[in-house]
Each structure stands twice: as C-alpha cells, then as structure tokens.
Length: 271
Image (tube, rainbow, N blue to C red; front, side, top):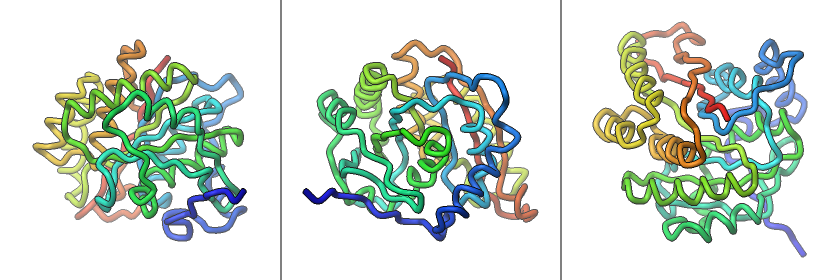
C-alpha cells in the first residue's frame, strides 16, 4: 500500500534543503545549550517559526535544554487561510531532507474523538510553514518522534477552550509534548516592537488565555495567538502553574536593521 506523505513546503527557503547542511545548522543552534546534565522535563513549549536565519537561535535555546518525548502535538497558525478553521493533518508522515517523520495516528484519532470543531484537512497544511520549521528541532533531539499537527486561526474562545480540552486529554493519555508556534510583533521599529512584545510576554506569563486573545484581537500581538491560547489552556487543565521565558529577540539582533523588525519569543512550561 502506498503511503501518503506530505512533501516539504519551505525546504530551501526557511531552512536548508540538504540533509547534512540542515542537521549541521540545527546542531549549531543547539550547541552551547545542550548540557552534560539531564535535560529539563517540560509539559510544553512555545517556539518561533520564521526562517532559521532569523529565529533559529531562539528555537535552539528552547529545544536544546529540554527532553523531547516520542510523541509531540504541534499547534500553529494557518497563514494562508486555506481549508477549515481548525485543521488536523492526517497523512502517514511529513518528508524532510533527513527523512520522514511519522504522523501519530493514535493521537490524531484521540484529538478528533475529543473535539467536534477539529477536522482532518490536508489542504490547510500543504503550504503552511509554521509547524514544518519546528519539526527538525524536535527530530534532532529525538529521532524517534511521531507528531500530530494542528493549524488554526479561530478567534472564538468557545472553540479555543474546546480544542484545549482535546489537546489536554490527548497529551496526558500519550505523554506528549505540546508545542505552540508563533512569532510576535511584525514590521515595527525595534524599540516599539520590544515594548509591545514585553507587554505580551507579561500576559503570557499570567497563563490567562482570554486576556491573551484580547491582546491578539486588539493589538495583533501574535500571529499564532490562538495556538498559544490553546496551549496555555491545555497546560492548565493538565496541572501547569507557570510558564518561563527562555529567550526573546528581534530580527534586528541578526540583521542589525532596526527600522522594521519581527519579534521572537521562546517559552517552556515546567511539568
């Protein structure tokens, strides 16, 4: 039987299209973060999704310090607005220059069973980069991973909470790591971006998903606002009490151009 494999959408653009170049770059971002001791056990992380040149060092700071279990649930925005509003991708795997990362069919079934809002929809994921750019970091930390991938742009708090219930139940059942994908402010002067982003960081630290979504709707604070809100709510349902900022940066820190930047934040939720 032929397997259904999602081809990469942004290999060669957001990250290298060559296996060795990709893995060398990944380990460069992880270097200096991976320690000799035991990696941190966390319930969830928030990571940026820009091209690695800009935000790879922030993602590396997050993933380099944590233990990545065999199962991961990723939630991110749908930048193109294609497909259903809450889309679960359900092929057999995702192809990368280093090979295929399998889709976890059992987790996908659990998510769909516990959510009336979520639907299987390959079209929503076909050209979406927000989760694709994160998976290689997970693979570098644990080559045995299997994933479930959700992209959504819903701003309905009822849907956010309903999805969070499904995500929380599935994560707890399978011992899965939760990953939310988002960048922060877009195309503002560096000083203004940092001021706005630190207001958003303060809200994220309260773990109040409703307050966060109000900021997303009112200020456009996060392109992946719904994904982060779902993660915060799911983590609280599974007993989380706090979230830690690991690293914050802007594209200006890499380019040196401060007139128009994008902000990036990396967070971990302790077990």
